[in-house]
Amino acid sequence: MALKNKMALKVESRPELSPPAPTPMPLALLLRLRLPARASFFLVALTACGGKGAATPESTPAGASAASSTPTVAGDQGTAAAPGSSGASVSATAPHAPAPEPIASALPIDLGSKVPPFAHRAVSPDKVSTFARGAIPVPEGLASQVDPTLPFFAWEQVLPPRVVLTFPKHTGLDLYVLVFDGEVSIKGEDIAGKQKRLWRWNAGRVPGLGAMVESKEPTRAILVLVANTPSSSLGQAAAQGQKVGWTKRPAPVTLVEIDQQPDLAWGGGAYHARLGFEDGSASLGSLVASKTAPIAQHVHEHEWEILAILSGDGTLVRTVGGREDDTPIAAGTFASIAPGVPHAYRPAGSSPLVAVQVYLPPGPEQRFKRLAAGGN
Image (tube, rainbow, N blue to C red):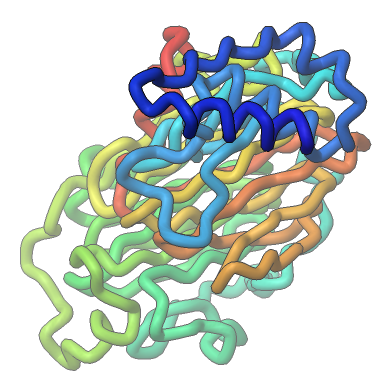
């Protein structure tokens, strides 16, 4: 401190001279300093990204962390992170933390017997056809779980063999279906060939509802009902009253084989994404990360992120009002992140993350393409 004061006095006594620019401290020297673990982690991140942190210019709100040294992924931004609406990427890893281990890119096909029941779950009765009812049409028993202020509702649908779940027409709503075990057909009079067949890791999009989901064998699927008008909620869509029917479907019913889409890999093979639907009211795809792969804090300024966790063990960390909110993540759980909420994922290290990932509206998923190409 005394030396610093003397230097300061020396500079003040000779105003015509400017103090020399400080020489940047080499990263190797930083790593040899005996700094606390958190401080060392932060310094490495700053050095790796030019000292500007991991925040995306457009997306980091006040109070959000601006630097991150953890590789990120997950339909979000960040280093090994997701493609997305916001959030910058940082690929530096703290000196005391090894790089995430790689994981095979193939989507697992044995999840049917391994994924525990989701909290939001409807089980169709055996040999009985059922109907989604209500202003916000969902299967019986789920109406009380729907939050009408949100733009979506996600649940697990369990179908015995040869049963039908029918959805009424609704111009303000779209339905997304992903089968992770079993087989179904989506049927409708206006559907080409009268049906679209979905197997494991196939997804279907049904604009305007007005279709039947018929099981061919015991089936477990993730269904997501979304309001298809930008910035509207399910409640606002339901408020249309009787003006919800249609004579012509708003857009064709389409399907995609998620497991046959290009594998977008980054982070040395620790992260993998496959994109199914990339347009319409929402995007839908798969996200896989190894059991040691974290997701650095990032934010989507305008998009909701919805995750159906089929495998995983860790903590979702959301920062709201400057305070961290930790939520355990495991197979059989849904998680959602509102626009503008900084969030991160810390793996427990016991099982890889496998998730169905939805963005409402689409956008952040495009970043996976840039990451796979070596960008950020």
